[in-house]
Length: 118
Length: 109
Image (cartoon, rainbow over all chains, first blue to last red):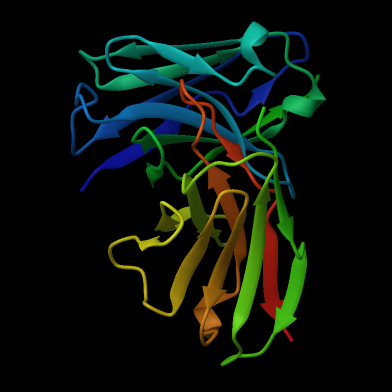
């Protein structure tokens, strides 16, 4: 059974860079059929796709966040990572990693709350 | 960018009720529309993909329909475990650019 697990600091200071890693187990991140993405959800609000990566390294970002987002993959560790720079309180959210095909998200991590505060 | 809207934003219903949620896209997205269920403190769960295909393991009381810009999610007989928030998501754009609807919260009447 595929499992995804987010990890990283739960508290980030304003203007700093948020960094999260998603570890994939029970399957290979190098599968040619899937992409690996990040989605976030501010407290009490809806879902926002941040961006995705293919195992080859091709990346796709939400235009509204593109200038601040970097997603990378480490196939040797079966992990992919998110960096979001210049964070503000508006970036406080639960961050999910997920596997997706070209169109749907079928496996999700449990999510991790990241709070931006001094 | 393709924008998604949902109606209603919330609804109250009783066990056994038939519930319908509507999702509308700002432009035609053919059948590139998925539905997710999210319970408090949990990750979303895929229910319906490609507008009307039931994900494996999802009860048959869930169904989806529509194409173009207008889509519906129907729960034929609401069960206690169905009280949750439901999101639609479009996947029409190439390269991948995903947008979720704002959600519809279904709670107990």
